[in-house]
Image (cartoon, rainbow, N blue to C red; front, side, top):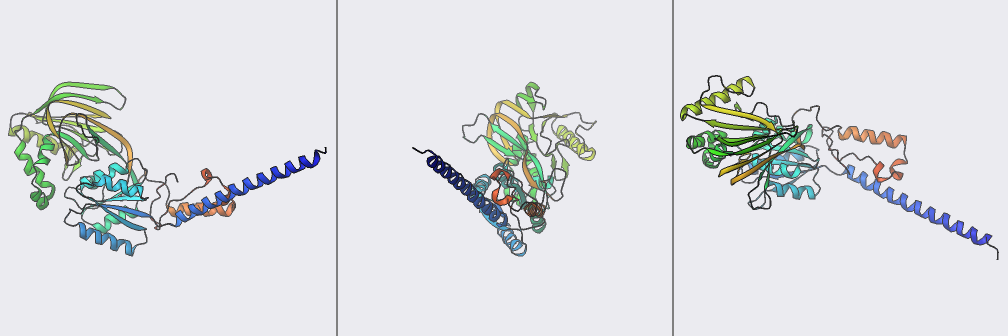
Length: 412
């Protein structure tokens, strides 16, 4: 039997099989390249998480829709918060639907809950402040009271890495025991003050209403507990049976007109813990006001040299746990969580990209125009690369229609 024809047939079949596999792989790569190119030309989608309960919510939405009709920056999609659907749930829904950026439209509560879903996703996060305090927006330099300017920041400027704090109520039976905060979380006097603030007064005089509420709690009982703080180097510091009026963990330390925590920085990967106490009745509170005023003027943490009846202990760390002798109210960025006896504070370093008015050294790298030019140069030099490269070798610029839009670089 002559084996040559058989061997030749086997070789021909093998060559044909290899050619078929190569063709199929090439077709798959070409299809992938076409899909990626279509994604590049798709409109950039901004998901606006809107709190409809704000008095200006309807007018703000109309302003946003008009802005997008007059500017080629992509498309706007709206998700409205509800009593049983907070900013976090809305933002998660938007991300699952493929939103390229999430923008919170509301006060600190809407910002906080929406940001908790966006953290860690590499999606940019913008803010249109229409609340009363807007403390996080103020700390980030985002325009207050100017919707057009805030929209320009959210759609056209650089992004900056920001830390996110977490407060966990360790004695809570709720499945979601962790609550995000971007400004300050605390227990004691500050939570009591926020909880008893008159909503109507707050609408009338904004954040000043908190001070009016605080007067009611100047002589409330103090709190007692054991505190353990973990420093950035991993060392632990324990204080037992401490007495205080309020204990706060800060990611940002500025409130309108005052500096509560001058050393707090929103991008240092560290929380600033502040333990405040007063004695001597109204004299102690007057001393404490002097301490805060001194910090505001000097931009340094510390007490007024004349203070005799107040104490402001400030410690930095990456984690803290406190066990209270009696339950106390807890709050995160002005939202009351209820009473608790055991709390943990932690920090997630640079978890969130926040759109800010000015570019910094920490901004996301390239604009879509720069990435498009880079892609076009690559295709001119190697025209076959797009059709034959493997998925891991294809560089995809993120979709955006505005030359000023910062790139949102993430894995395809």
